[in-house]
Image 1 (cartoon, helix red, strand yellow):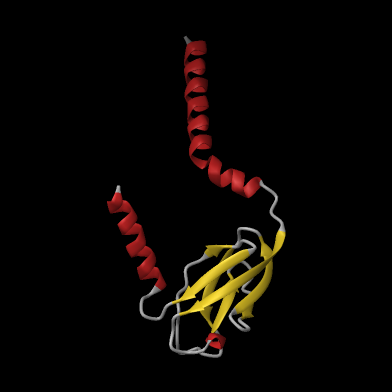
Image 2 (cartoon, helix red, strand yellow):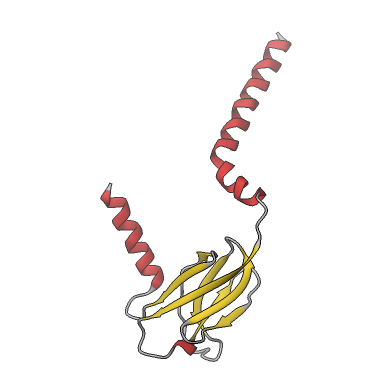
Length: 132
């Protein structure tokens, strides 16, 4: 009787482990793959009424920031790490909440001051949900 209970317990634990792996495998595989440092070239599309030097690209993992020059910013980061469009620390009284984007060699970031980037992300997500 005790062997039967042990077998049932082992079977349940095996099923549990399989389910955990199934649901978390995409995140685990991303974490386990070796990421390379890449040069990221970011093109700014400035839809705001002020100049591009107000904006920076912020690497969230390290806190490193780069400025735009002629609408382009370059930064070396691990591929896939998050980059976000933000306001320069020269303007501490103002805030711009950009949406984190995974780093890839060529990127576009849009500065749109007419709507909050987070609100736009929420609205896009809602449109996608109701489309189905």
